[in-house]
Amino acid sequence: QVQLVESGGGLVRAGGSLRLSCAASGGIFRSYCMGWFRQAPGKDREFVAAIRRTGDKYYSDSVKGRFAISRDNIINLVYLQMDSLKPEDTAVYYCAADDDGGVGYQWTLTYDYWGQGTQVTVSS
Image (tube, rainbow, N blue to C red; front, side, top):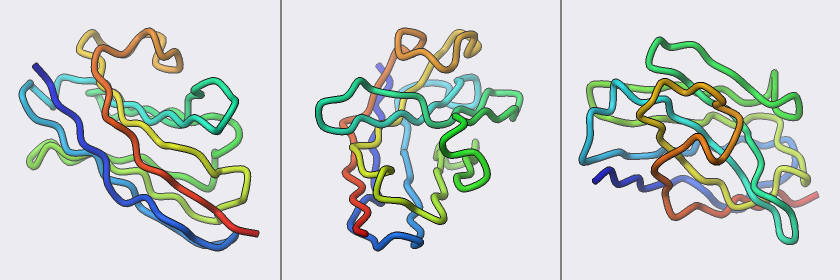
């Protein structure tokens, strides 16, 4: 059973930065497609970024150029560097893992495992 634990959320002013981390255990991390999603109050969970086992990276249009996803297959961590944060980035951010290649990486149903989420709040 794969377990994912996010950390690094918090309160930041608009224009600031945060780095989220997701620690994975219980599986073959290097083989997973890893994704970040977020969910704001009253809204559906939405795709933010993904990184496949090949290292290919994908971003939603709303974060492209501001956020960067990376992974460290030695220590089983995936990161989300968030710069130039905006109030509309406020949400609970979730880490997810897919053990089947990441086809459809932008869809929540693609992912087999989820973390508990970490709150990011951006003040104006």
